[in-house]
Every structure is written in C-alpha cells, then in structure tokens.
Image 1 (tube, helix red, strand yellow):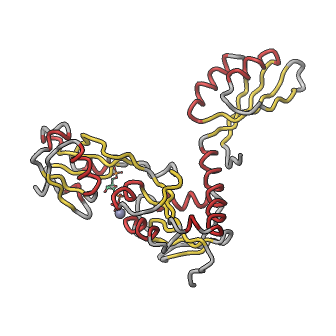
Image 2: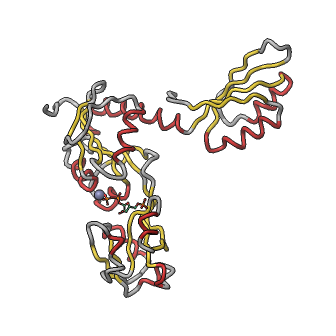
Image 3: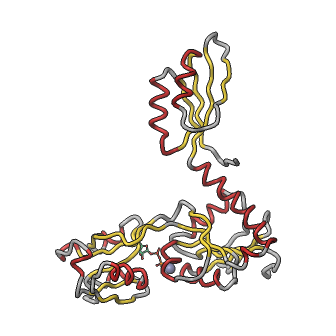
Length: 291
Ligand code: PRP
Ligand code: ZN
C-alpha cells in the first residue's frame, strides 16, 4: 500500500502515552482505520485521510516540514521542539504535568533550592527557560530516557519529567516540587496546509467531527418527571442551554422535561432539580453534539 497524495495525512504516536487516546479519538469521531499493527501507516476507510505512526518526539518536525498535514502530540513535545506549527485544538486526553522532582530524602523543597544543582531532563529547552526566568542557576543535563533513575545514579540532584499518574515518581522515591508545564494532547497543523483551500476544507470537516465528540463528552442528557407547577423553577435551574423539551405525561398535572446538562455543573444541577420537585431522573451520555 502507498500513501495517497490527495489524502490528508495525520501523524500520531506509534507507541506510548498518547497512542491509545489518539486511536480512540478517531473512533469516537467516526473515523475507521485499518489495523495499524506493526505498520508505519494506515488508511481511513471512510475519510480521505492516511495516518502515520511515528515517535512522538518526531511529530512536530514532520508536521512543520509538511510530511503530514496534521499531528496529534503532547503540548510538552510541541513546546520543547519549538517547531513552526499551528496549534488547532486541545483534545482533552493525555493530560500530564512536566514537573521538577527531587529524591524524597533530599531536603529540597522548591525550585529555588536548585541553584548550583544538576537537573536531568529530556526537556532541556523548557526546563532551561523555566530556570532562567526565575534566575535559578542550575545545570541542565539532557538525558533521552529513563530520567527518573538519574538521582539514584548520582548523575543528577533533581529531574524535570512528565508526571501522569505519578507511579513512576513513587517507584523511584521521588516527589514533585514544581509544575513547569501543564500538558495534554493537541492537534497541530502544517502552516502551508492551512493556506491550501482544498486541505482546509478537509481539515475543517475533520475538526467538526472531533469537536462534536469533545463537546458531547462534556454533556449529559437528563430526563425527569416533575409536577407542571415546578416548571418555572426547573427552567431557572437549567444552565445556559436552549429551552428544554417539555412533554405532558398521562398523569394529569405531570410533565417530563428533557435537557442537556454540562458535566462540570452536573451534580449541582441534579441536586437543585430534585429539590425543585423533579423525580425519576434518568441520565444518559451524549455521543455527538453538532451545533
Ligand atoms: C513519561 C515519563 C515517565 C512517565 C510518567 O514518559 O518519562 O516515564 O511518562 O508517567 P506516570 O506518572 O503515569 O508514571 P512519556 O510517556 O512521555 O514517554 P516518552 O518520553 O518515551 O515519549
Ligand atoms: Zn517520546
């Protein structure tokens, strides 16, 4: 199989923290890819797009150079590499923090304790900028992997590395003392592709599908029964959505109310609805939200 020159190309991580999330996002956006097992690329069967599976560290460069039009990669990698790419959308998965961490027994408690010390990291650019901005004169040692073992080998006094669940740090008796960067997966684009009308049209259709999934994830659909007399109060509780669907019930004076509720205020809204007289609340996930 060869790459199709007409198709949009997107690079995603071959193996690592973001690979599963990237493939799940494609699926949730309704894009079907052929199996990627062991391949460098695969074709989408229902969208003119090919996916390339690469090392995450290489993705910003490939996108900058136009090898692929788009890429899904951690903000941490984009910021570290400093390539000229457009950041289009944050994708809500692969959240992590780039942290400075020190051995638990070190007595070091803040970044300002690190003057004169050695910090090992795979993120020399971000780490260096962070230290410089705060006037901390520490030595940055660039290490390409397994940074967490450097303090125990006396290669470094501290590390600056990605913390996701925190289990890698715990395993090595390290504790975070500063957050240098908050990161998540981001959709990046080649600048030239964004000047090509045919590609822009394909990119925008793709983004609409991705964004409808991201919006839906933030929303629950709630159905409830209530006395008709509680309707005004219930409407007052429902947050900033378009007017709810009201259906009369067979029982005289009772109605059913259907509405979307944003995830972040979900429990507050549910409690207020119950207090207003709503009963039999039924909550279902929203799969797509097209506005
Ligand atoms: C990071 C980091 C740790 C791990 C931390 O690697 O280097 O090894 O994740 O995760 P935890 O807090 O859940 O234990 P990353 O996935 O970014 O891999 P890479 O550097 O090989 O690309
Ligand atoms: Zn990597």
